[in-house]
Length: 154
Image 1 (cartoon, rainbow, N blue to C red):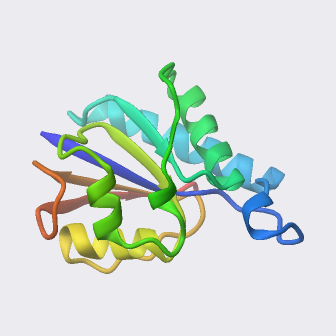
Image 2: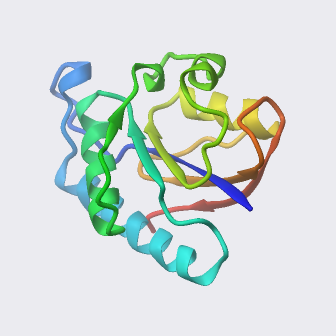
């Protein structure tokens, strides 16, 4: 089974410019809670462990990716990808990643994440902050994945 994990960043400060919004203390707590729930689900299922963590280069997404990686014991190199920006298109993301993405955690923003889930598995899922969507499929492509679970930090 191949899984792709799509996560929206935690709650960020509203007073900073768009690319400099750090996570708030609430946002950090949300991400930590989601990481704990995700870790429990990884142990209880046959989902693959993290093999790569990729984030947009906006501060709130990077901080979310770093918290997730640390909480899950992942020690690899965080990759930044400009195609994971809020207004990117799913096709741009598809072109920027290898076709083999099993165990990859992509940390991004709305409206891209909603468009990604719709593109990959033909379902409409709006992710709140710090929500993680688990998709199952074989190769990265339109309509080739199935929604397995939505993990919330609550």
